[in-house]
Length: 192
Length: 192
Image 1 (tube, helix red, strand yellow):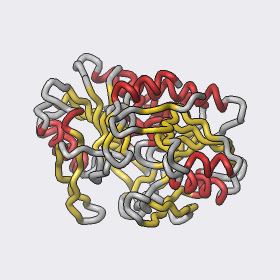
Image 2 (cartoon, rainbow over the protein chains, first blue to last red):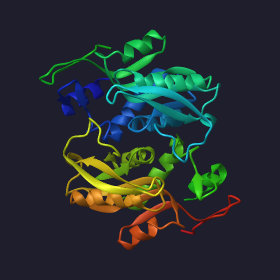
Image 3 (spheres, each protein chain N blue to C red):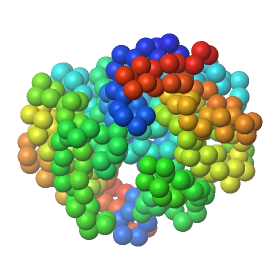
Image 4 (tube, helix red, strand yellow):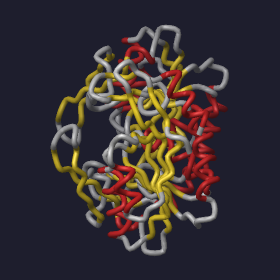
């Protein structure tokens, strides 16, 4: 999606160690106009799939998931990273390994909001090593529901997540795939 | 806002200890149609205030903040509860006391996204003891920016937060104020 690629080029900050900062419009500050355009693109890509629910994970995924669900006319469900007082005891859980913190964490959704008739579009702002996405897929499968596919804003194509999930036979649509990040900050986008 | 009051009545779960669960449409599962109607109401209430930014706190506040910011044609900024790798060192911080966990926590926003020319509408899904809202007000003031007011979905009128913040001279618009919760689950809404 050229609009997103152009925005990344314009506003990105590349830090040592392969960190791509896009927090001026995607995951700290959020540009709702861009979110709307991305939501429309996800709708265009998945509109024939009978989507009944958009699933994401807190926190920054919510910013794209809500306009996306609005396009589809369905609800959002966001997985939680901690079991809060508000969450019932009846939950599906999955393990997510954090490469940043070298820890295994659990994520949760209430059983009552996901069931076997659901056709779920998983949406997130970033896809890198794929751990969060794999955890979300596990949650959907634990509920006996169907993963229609994933809608990702920015995929780091030089990390393994996208490859792993596509090899599982799951459709992954990333609106921008960064295949290379040079130390001088230059990015190469995959042709799509 | 009658639409929200009716939805609370229809889908609420009241638990012992004054817990009002509205996680089927507001803070776990999110209904984007309701979010849009609430966003329009916040726009109606604050449209003459020259809002330049919508500020919220992760995670569930993001669900209402993004459509709200879209109505105003401005960006969202969400405060983070932990300093992640993505967050620069240049941050404003504020303390937020958690009554649930009896701990003092810090919240953060990057300095680059909040400055003294900003007129900030603070948006959140819940207002109870007001600690999160007070922390967000501190962040805005640390930046030398102006708090235009707060837009809250559900206020628990029998807790102190709303009273404290209004006494500071800050405009607080809550779309539903629950003044009483009985043990049998009956709610009384404040006439507005």
